Image 1 (tube, rainbow, N blue to C red):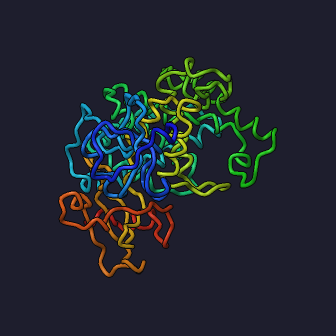
Image 2 (cartoon, rainbow, N blue to C red):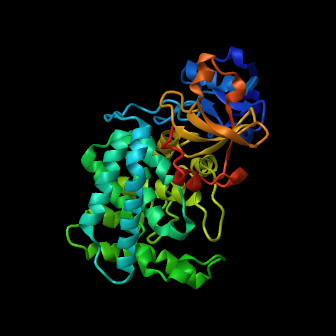
Image 3 (cartoon, rainbow, N blue to C red):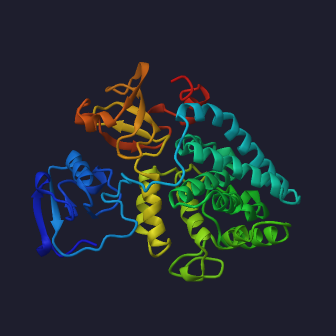
Length: 409
């Protein structure tokens, strides 16, 4: 929270020092990529990032306590080192993941369709899907996260279930969970919405606002999910709890039981955040997708009330400003897609440029590593100016993936 105006001091970015708390910028927060509106400068790297976007800032001289999950400027520039380190090239992993992801999506859709028809949950199939996701994320998280950005509104439920699994495992990896716990967490993510297979399709896909009766039927998916999983032999107990409680809130305003955060399990708190993020960043029949940055800002604002505060901040740090698959515009006017994150400088990813300065399609796609801005090999105008929704400028991520964009470079 920003202190009173009497505590604010205007400084040139050249005067900033580690330990200062930036409370106000020389421009609107929405014109910058900073998710957190107010942040502690924890190291010289944070100062460098602020300097790239601002000339002057106002620092709050009142004491501020850093969150144990703080990431400085809120750009996720320095995610903690995991016990697992990527050991394959992202392009190689993407080659393997294209067909594997499609297969996992088909299997997930088939499993959910069978449940809707009254068949039992195929536990072994679900576990195998999760194991494959865990292994890919251990090898290289960006590859699977890139695939999770590719959307098909017609396959929302299956895609959402699989994406929550993928994102939860990637998040759990950053939290330092071991492989066994990652598989448990992934299973919680894959099956969290299984109860929706007991909700009528016309309610799930209704383009307009739900009636009060329809809202009650929709909310009942948590109870249906619990009952379905409780009747499934050898299912992980945590998955039952997550299916039942992932819409509970820290302040006790959630459903179905309206219990406070103290009664919600660790894995369920994780899935609650991931579920909300993936839902917000997907096109639905009743709403347009938000950009990743917009969704993360909403999660940030709801920390401590809807979501576990420390986990929300950590999730923002894990996803970063520009996750793989983000459609971005540079200050040059050029437009491209993020291919790979930079684990040290998360605001300087590796991108492929598709449109030139006038927003015309380039004769030849060009890969640019924005870390060259940090080294001085590229001018500052190559910084990212804005994130756009998938489909902007006629760029549809799914179509580029089908054409093998990530496979031929």
